Amino acid sequence: MKRKRKVIFTITSLYLDEDEGVECSSTIGWYPNLKTAQKCVEEDWPDIDEAGYYNYVVIERVVEGLYNMSGMLLDRQTEWWYSFDYKQEKWIACEKPQWSVGTINWGLG
Image (cartoon, rainbow, N blue to C red):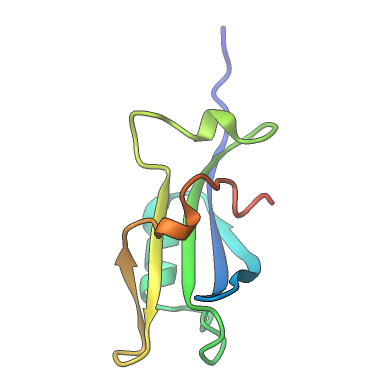
């Protein structure tokens, strides 16, 4: 019988310079469920943007094991992206940015 592997949701903040690309990323935490991870970002619990420095956040579904390949499900969403809206001073859900297509496992490196 196959054992059920643990799933967590990592939260990674990123700084993107439009000319240079991603210059910095930091996995700032994880939660055992998506709802709490999303609430953390949407309510900006720990001041994720760090005074305007980080401008993107990605939440990723991560499954216990190496390389997280089983976490990348083809039939379900496994990443949730946010960009920081400086006028509203809050995180806004967004589509996966074009510059990040083809990259996975931000939280694991």
